[in-house]
Length: 215
Image (tube, rainbow, N blue to C red; front, side, top):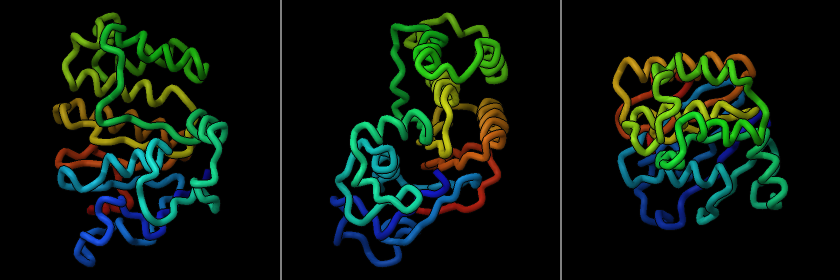
C-alpha cells in the first residue's frame, strides 16, 4: 500500500454540525503517503479514535470515501481486511487491548507467533531499548499504563506494515520513555519505508513530522 486518501470523510455524528473550516481533516481531501510521518492533534471527543477505527476497518459510520491506493475500502471483503491487517496496516490502540493476565512478553509473542516476523532476539532487544526488559515476565495487569503502552508498541512492530496507526501512544509515558519509543519507531519504520499516523490530545510522540493536522 502506497497511500491512504480521505475524501470528504466525516463521522456521521458530526455531519452537518461542524462549522466550516474548523478541521484540517474532516470534510477535506487528505493524502497520507507511505514513508512519511503525520501528527493529528485533537481535543477529546473530536473523533481521533474514530478515525483510527475507520482506517482499520473496525467502523464504517462515516460519510465520504476512504481509499487505500485507488481502491475504496468499502469494497473490501473480510478476507481482504484480514490480509491488509496482516501485511499492510498495524495499529496501537488507545485502549491498548492487551491481555492483563498474560505477561508482557506473552502478549507480544501471541502476535509474533502468528506472524513469525521478529526473532526472539529482536523482541528482547526492543524490551531493553524501551527500558522494560525487567518487566517482560510480569503480568500486564501489574504494569503501569506507561509500561503497557511500551509493550503495545513492541507488539505493533511484530508484523509487516506499510502504515502504522498510533492512537495517543504516549499519553501515560514520561519524556524520556517517550523519546525511547520515538527512536525505536523511527528506526523500524525507516527500515521498510512505512508511513506513520499518530494522534494526540496533548503529549506528542517525538518524531520528525512531515505535517500536523488538527481535528
